[in-house]
Length: 454
Image 1 (tube, rainbow, N blue to C red):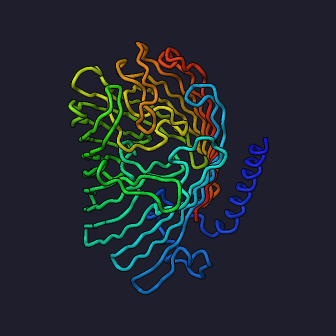
Image 2 (image 1 turned 90 degrees about the horizontal axis):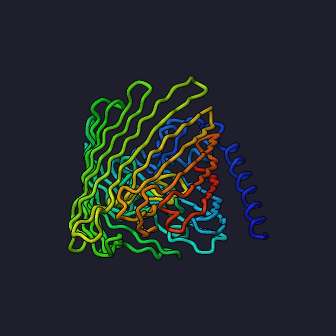
Image 3 (image 1 turned 90 degrees about the vertical axis):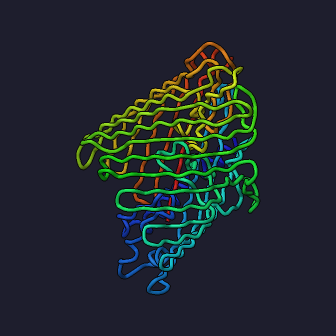
C-alpha cells in the first residue's frame, strides 16, 4: 500500500512539473516540432528568432558564422500496470523513468552528435533487460556531407520505414542502438543508404553496455523512391543478419538470414495506403530458411479544421513453420521491430501470425482518441506463438489456430510540442490456442505516459 501511495504521489508531482514547464517555455514557441530522433529536430526557428531568451540560446548557440551548438533533451515517466500478464494469475504495477540529454555541434558540413540516457524502474519485482540502464551513451556519431553524399560513423538508433524490421524500439524504457557505419546518397527522387551495424547489448549499471561483434551483426541497404511527392512513394531494401543461438519450435541454432522487402505507400485524396511485403532466405543450423510476410494498411480521413476523423484497417500474414521436423524453417523473423508492434501491451510479436486490425481515431485540437480491435490467429498450427522481442513465449503445440481478441483505447493530450500526456489500455481475451495451453485468464494492461522535451 505504501508503494502504491508513493507512486500515486509521484504521478501527481510529475504532471504538475510537466504542465508548469509547458507554461514557462511554450508560449513563444508554438510552432516548434521535435522529432522522435532528436538529431532530426528542425531548429531553424531558433536561428532566425530575434530577442532570444535563455532557452532560445540553448537551442541555437552561434559559435561562428559556420558553426553552432544545440542542446536539448527529454524526460519520460510511465506508470504501467498488468493484471494476468502472460495470461497467468498475477497483478503488478511499476514506474519507469527515462532521461535523455543531447548535444549537437555542427561546423560547415561536419557534425558531432552525442546523447546520454539514464533509465530506471521502481517497484517492479523482476525488471526486464530493457527497463534499467543507470547511465549510458545511447548515441555518439560523427558525420560529413559532400554534395549529395553523407558518411556517418558511430553509435545511432535505427529508424527505417514502418519500423517493421529495423526500429529504435520506442515503447520500452530503453531504446535500441547500434555501432555502425553508413553511406547515404539523396536527391529529389532517391534516398539510398548502405550500412554495416553491430548491436549494443544493454546492462543495468553505468557505462557497462557492450558492442556485440562476434555473435551478431547486420548489413544492408535501404532505398526510398519518391515518384510523386507524398502521393506515391516506394521503399526497396535488403538486410542481412548473422546471429547465434536463436530458438524456434524447431530447436536452437545459429542463423544467417537475408531479408528482401518492398513497400508502396502514399495518399490518394482522403485515403492513405501502405502495402509491404518481405521474403527471407538463409540458413538455420543445417536447415534452409524460407519465410515471408504481407501487410496492408488503408485509412480514410475526413473532417474540418477543428475535428478530424479517421477509419483504418490493418491486416498481416506472417509465416510460421510448416513442419518442425523437416529441413526447412518457415518462421518469419522481424529482426529488430518496434517494441509496441500491436500496442503497448506487446504480448504477441510478428511471427507465425495472421491478424485483422480495424481502428478509429478522433483528433480535436490537441486531443486524440484512438479505438482499435485486433484478432490474432496462428498462421501454422505446427509452430508456436512468439513475443514482441521474437522470443518463443508460447511454444505449446495444439490444433487451435485462434489466439485471442485484443481491445484497445488510447487517449493523448499534447498541449504543446514540449509536453504530452497519454493513457493507453488494452484487454486481451484468450482464444482456443491459449485456452488449450491452460492460459485462460483475461489480460488487462494500462500505461500512463507523461513526457516533456526541450
